[in-house]
Length: 245
Figure: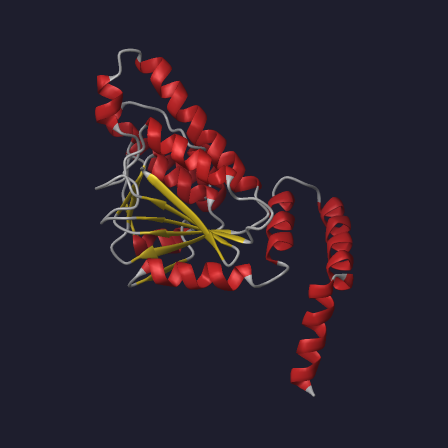
């Protein structure tokens, strides 16, 4: 098993457990897809973590080098990985990632599919693709320009420049930097799972990235009206007013 998944108190805990560096082979890509598919309506937040000193060093180059049909093998790996990323980005539940050590290649793609990223102080970020002569995959050419801007994205993807955790924070690649990312991310995911409007908020922000301002205003009006008359919305306002009295 290279990916573990469990659902507790509305949080889907998805963890890379492949081993040192958690390189993504076909089994890991398939494991991520299976884990993503388990995130049903009962999941209100997703926590993505990895065992070991590094979050994910990218694709498993040893497996790739041993493949008899390399093109076909890479297609199978990317098909599974990309389908998993599609599910994560379309989930209404917020996705929180905790990263440590090396984050490279497809590891950046996993980071890009998350909504909030908590980085350990020792985390480093590098594209990795230029070093092996491959173009990016895992949605990196889509997510990275949106996170850090097209000019820095091209710099990272073309020159293979490595970012430290503080540099990644300043660039907008991660949400925060802490001494221990796992516990901070777990606490955050648990808190988001308890907030009834988290999913609606994520959906609105994602839609707003590609929609018009007029449509966004209409979508916001519908969403806040629906939330206000829901049991959770009514209870939230009542609880807030009780605290103010």
